[in-house]
Image (cartoon, rainbow over all chains, first blue to last red; front, side):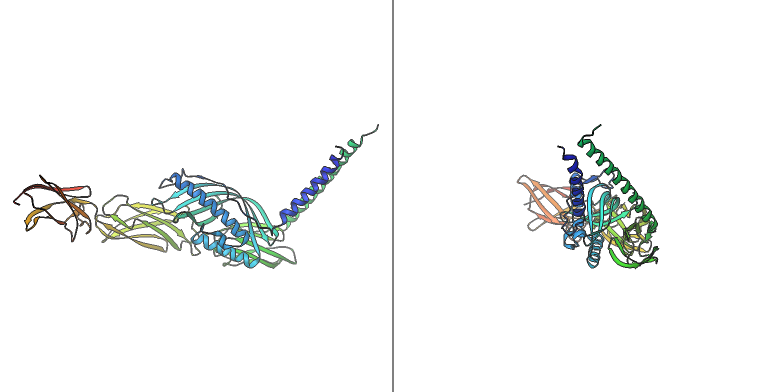
Length: 177
Length: 298
């Protein structure tokens, strides 16, 4: 028991050192988990959003973020899968290509999304979301963290339905809603 | 007075912690001062496709990092000189992070003027003279395919055979939509959405809606009763499309006979078995036509 006060600071220091070392190690593969997406459809119009559509949108949008986080971290366009289409897909592909050329990659630690559906077209062919996302963004040069930031960002998102899922067609950051 | 080994150790720990806190505070102060001294000055927003100059201070070389939508830049720069980001570097709307020598800044690239429209028009075929049956959704993009989020007017115009209806709606976060009545006249309707220099046309085929009324006549022929309608039109006078099914029904003491016939060249005709005393009716969809009491010879 007497040794405890002597050992504890040393242990704490060691643990902190190990944590810092581990957090700097970026060459290990990072796998994003499916983020939480809370979606509110009360403001959507002119067509009301059905329950099944609401669930499908939340599922597919969360899946898109997970795929994007993995693709940007590993610089693998194939990980985007079928979650993106149109300009959003083109821009992500361009980002991944540019990162690959420069040896950079991005790590997104997703802390969840609060989403309002604000537009759902009357024929059901387009939906616009306003997403407030809480993220830790890290820009990495190889295994070195160049910049790390905890941010709350606002995204305007346009989704279009495909055969059996919703695809992200536009994903743009805006200053506020 | 003697102090126990336990008390001595605790005192040492407290002193050590205090010293560490003071050192950490001093380091933080130095860091804050250094960061402030080398702060990156970037504007809050930049228009897509514009170039940007970022002034730097100090001397020697450092590595510049820029991460944004569609972009990832890493290059060596000379401190004390301006960093140039070209129009090609800043085409895509969104958030850009700039890092240089341990300092960071962010700015937003915003969409430029409207250059193109994505126009969703539904449905492709509608009955004429029906309220709120045609919907149009317009999404506005700049020349780099960024969604234009500033409110913009969009004119929706529907025209058939020289008659047109138009409505102007403002976009909200890049989207404008409308609902329009179909025209009284059938035909291919030109549905146009335009905003600034951009314009997109879709064709909505307007067809006659349900028949307004159906009138038939009957005459005896060699093998039965020949039934024939007058030209079938909707309530706006448009001919109901060929292929629409018309049902003729004859009821007599033998039972009921039904024949479905398609409209061909504006009229429908069918042959029913001969009967001496029958009630013959005609209908299409929910519209019922005239009834004939047939008295004839077998």
